[in-house]
Amino acid sequence: MKTIGTFLVIFFLVMITTSVSAVTTEITVHVKTKDAKFLGTSMGGALVTIKDAQTGELLAKGVTRGGTGNTALIMMTPLTRGRPITDESAAGFTVSINIDSPSLLEVTAYGPLVNLQAANKASATQWVVPGKHITGGDAWVIEIPGFVVDVLEPPTHVNLSGTPQSVDIRANVTMM
Image (spheres, rainbow, N blue to C red):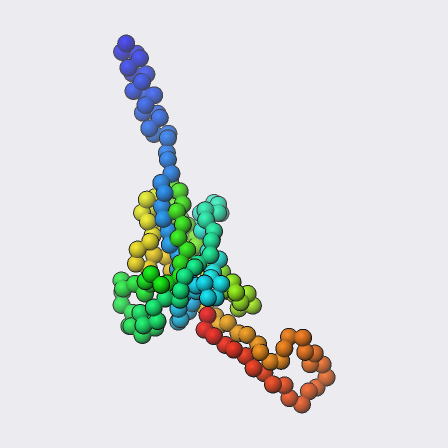
């Protein structure tokens, strides 16, 4: 009887120590354009990928959705440490991932997806602890620099061979 009891204790200890289960951890990523607002649905959003930085394993992938955020909060209110610049109107990508130990994650953002000629990429790494959600405040903000430039004139198909006297150039330039 004592042998069976000892065996059961050892069996359960082995089971407890070897059965590591992953913990669901929520992450929200916001993609902010440099010195401007958030990259949301109106610009096609940004493609967000979340990978394990040490193994390269793809953990999640999706597109930011939502608005560009609160203009007064982002552009007109002086920044102070700890004060979020996101609110419910700021575009984001939220996902639940399963990790079983503290993991160094890499988030990459690529966009805007509606103007690929202006698309840019930025990434950042951060240690994430299982069950410690990154969703409050600004959550995880990635900043993409650049401008969206739409050439209006001359049209793409115009051949400017030779030496023209003048060429009218018109463009719509928007902060990303």
